[in-house]
Length: 333
Image (cartoon, rainbow, N blue to C red; front, top):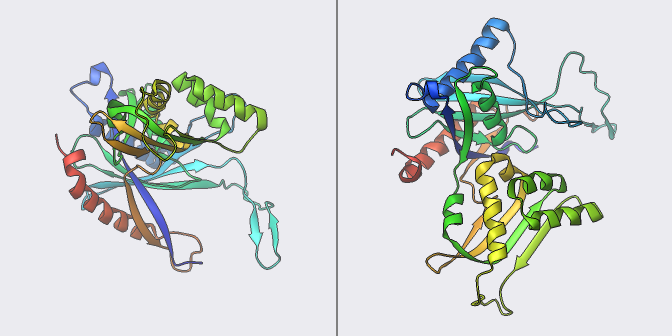
């Protein structure tokens, strides 16, 4: 096994919308701190975690039970060090290297399996609490963190916020792309079939419903569309605007703005387009996120366990550099 693991972090802001009676008294920072206090008080006084099931209202769906197991403030770093966990419904299979057998017959007794995502929250007052979140393909995502704090601050628990939105930092903002797009030269899209119904509900676009129909016909693992609107030889189309593809592209991007989970459900979204200045641009929703790259060591003699102390130090080091570079974009008003 390698001594290090490459870990990516993505940055976003947690933007809360307080109830009318809280307006002017409590902003995003105050609401976030109140949520953390509730988490820590419940753990200390009641010896339990606050578990929120994101799928509790869905019929015949697996649960998505989330809880925050750590939210510790570091005064020297002015950051909260947090962990959000996802309880797994199914026991994974394990490989016995000596016997060359795979089995799920593991006696967990009173234990449950969890997937953990580390995230750190910067309390320096720029606009809203800025979060850097570890990317964990199997664990909780940005939309899970957003949902957890939305639920905790809502009428269900603290009754101090009616909305919570994760504003993901992108190399080029989605809003900017929507506003500047004048024509589409290339469109590429990939998603799992099970993600398409939700995407259609968010877009009401026939292009997505046609993709659904195709997926229902042949049951693929994923659906990918790669379209080019150039003449042979690679030249730009100089005819009328491609209004249909322009409309579809903008609807998908607007859905991303409206619902953070849409971004996570799309496996690939890439555009080559003409902007309002007449220039050719490109945009990738998946690869266009601002990313902090960390090479984290494993704990000594602990197979597969990252050294989380080193993980924070390394992530913070990259975040400080990122903040200094991007302050003109995400810094003070």
